[in-house]
Length: 392
Picture 1 (cartoon, one colour):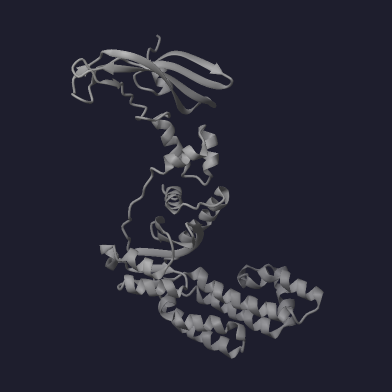
Picture 2 (spheres, rainbow, N blue to C red):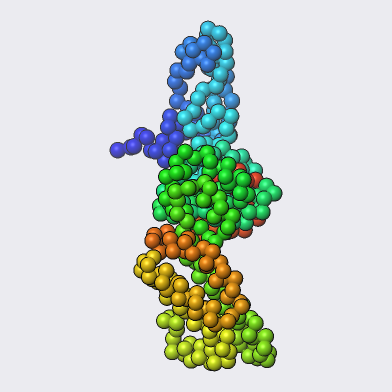
């Protein structure tokens, strides 16, 4: 039995009558017209089906069977018998003043969920990069609702004259909330003051930034600041690196190169070392007493980060600070001062499982987006691209 609606099902265009199909130089050209129906006059509302004349409109559609597809729509222009108003018939798959179908526009917007440049999207959708930008500029995101757990960080965006932009995320539900144009304190105060629910924020995860800490304490009076574990451990790793760099200056060229190439070995957890790596480590530590002390300080700090609760972490951290100060390592001075200054926020880390891990992963995706796009100067478009890319 012949299926009479096969053309409509194949094209996916409702009420579109196909009259001809041509394949020209690898492009599919579909000719057709809309099924005749009664329209209301846009001026007086009179119902009519009187046709004044026809015109052919070429419309771009999504690619079919791996080939670029064009619709040649023989469009009717109706005339109102009452007021003589002339108007074109409406089509459900084509918006007014558009030369591309609605599903092609949806396909373009869907491409923005992946990390690619507008030029690449235009090439895939058979349109120019400027048209892609024009379509995407209709996408707009409003102001989010602040969750009970908030994460704040900065990244280098270079958009509209500002070197750094600010990102807000929900580390609990893994969502990007908003992108702010800069990291200036007065602008952050102004932004957060517009949220009536800011008093309901319980925790704010962040790196060890004094600027963010002052903004958070003023904007979220009831929230507890949680220092990100990665940034905390990184400070201790940097202190060890400063010791290694100073010590290797005392060695000859061959040993200096050997110490330089052993950076990863010194930063690795001792439990994760192989037998061969333990022997190499023993040689490194025997060459310098200062490196040996710095290494044990780092390994002890690794164990500190595995404490189960705030009480044990506080005792362990106090002992660690006393031990490091007895080592007489000037390179650790800035690290210990910073830890003492952020003591309360560090201890909050052991009360909750929140961190900036999701935020840092998002920042990495933003870097990839900037690289493939060769930078995005328009901040509004940059913000929309990030929020679209990170949406479900």
